[in-house]
Amino acid sequence: VETPTVYLLQTTLVEMRPWLKKPLWVVLQEDCGQQINTSEVELHQRSAKTQQEDTTAADAFSLEYPDDDDDQAEAEEQSQQHQKTQTHNIHDSLPSRHLSLFDLVSIGVGGTIGSGIFVLNGLIAHSYAGPATFISWIVSGIAALLSGCCYAELSGRIPSAGSSYAYAFVALGELPAFITAFMLTLEFLLSGSAVARSWGDKVVEWLRVELSVSEEFISILQPGYGINPMACLVSIITTLLVLWGVKESKLVTDFFTWIKVFLVIFMTVGGFILFNPANMTPLVPPEFGAAGILRGSISSFFGYLGFDAVCCVAGEAINPERNLPLSIVTTLCIVTFLYIAAAISLVGMQYYTDISPESGFPEAFKSNNVEWAAQLTAAGEVVTLPVVVLISIIIQPRLQFAMANDGLIPEWFGEIKNGALFAGVLMTLFATFVPFSMLDDFVSAGILVAFTITNCSLVVMRRESVNHRLEKLLALFNLSSFITCMILSHVGHIGWTLTPLSIYIAWKISRTCPPTSFGNSQLYIHEKYFTTPLVPYVPCLGMFVNYFLISQLSIFGIGFLVIYASVAVMLYFAYGSCKMTTRGWEDQHYSQVDAKDGRVIPPNAVIT
Image (cartoon, rainbow, N blue to C red):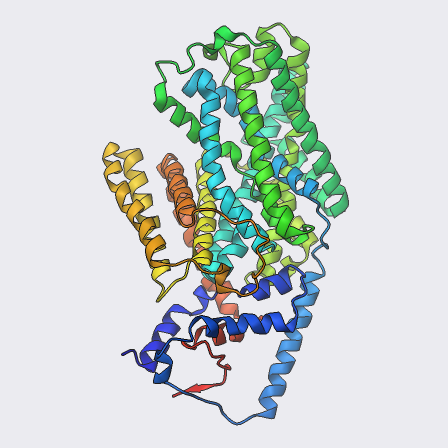
């Protein structure tokens, strides 16, 4: 029989600060600005007792309460009042809920559509799949939807700034959330810098080829030594725009996003007008085969990265329970449709062996003697691509705000304009001086890790864990999936023999960890939220796909990511955990998990 002493020792080891989870009611009340009445909070605190009434292990110990201490009570009251004031000041910096469904879709589409349309279509058609490029986009779209469903459900139920960081804090704990935030920084800050640098190169190429600008002027824009002045310019402009105001940056985002969409529609319609059915034969070139389609789907998947940017502005979304899931699904549908239609029109306009892997549509229009369309397409890409940089600089401060609100980084970042200034300066420096050719795989791997953590978070919130069985099975699933995918990619087909292990673990989760209310919380008593089907199978399949994509990246990129994650862990223990910020809910959290019968244990209770 488990003694109280053994139980308390296990609780101490498992529930120590790095694994401290943020209660759902705190997220809903503080981060989202929602008003949760006292009865709902009390209902949440009593939920553990309702679920464990039949447990007999509670008879092994009893509670004794020390005498009341007026001084201690007064000190605790002052501490809680200070925390409320601090939290209030931080939350004042976050704008009120002002983002409509249209705004959210604009952020999602604007942050996603980029190189996928302008570069990847030509590359995949020329090098991997030929006329079957659209099949590659369909396959990768399904793979993206696996993680997209997890984001859709979590964003509606936890509508808090921080995206995957917020979900990991609630489901997995403080340390996993801290690491997730570092991965998201790769997606928003570094990838935004990479796009700014890519835009700078495209501007120079456009000026040289389309406008025949003199080489003397080009030498100013390309001074060498890895310096990119145009990337510096676009980073500074977008940062100033964000600092100017929320309304202005939102209007610019909406405008340029839909200009980009109309540009893609123009390219696609133009391609269908010039469509030659003979260019679609053979549909699957024999030199590529099914393996080429799969390789193309791996490359095209990265064209979907960015849809989760919607989740980082969840704290500013109007009617988040409805609009956030709807915006994510709508973004994926719009982007997938545009990618597929553009792929078909490009290959139909020009034979796949002649398609330019760097500038597909402009060169295809030129090959059909439609010079004005080629110039318009090239100019449109230059004009609309900076919206990706703008969205990155909008999103990153929201992530920093969420971390500052939780005390994991200095409170200075709790001011949105401070965070925007900090992120803008870093982005400008990276975009101007850092060549990203060696860091692309590193950034992509970090984004996929954030996707995987989100999938894990949904499984934890939707399945019941007894003695941490679910967490152990998920850790084993992640390890087996990663090893299997690495063997598949770098050793050979022998890796397929290990896939049954991952399948078995997913089945074991389904059989031994029964479904439960979201996070064991009674706050979700109304069925008004988007629900991911077939949990845990859909999230687990999404995790496996993510690991397979990671395994396709360079060993250098994966190794650099491991070093980066290690630095994040060290920073957490150097600052985040040592600061021991009092947030007002830690004691309430422990009071809900320490009692095996669900009784509320005050922090000063003595267990005998």
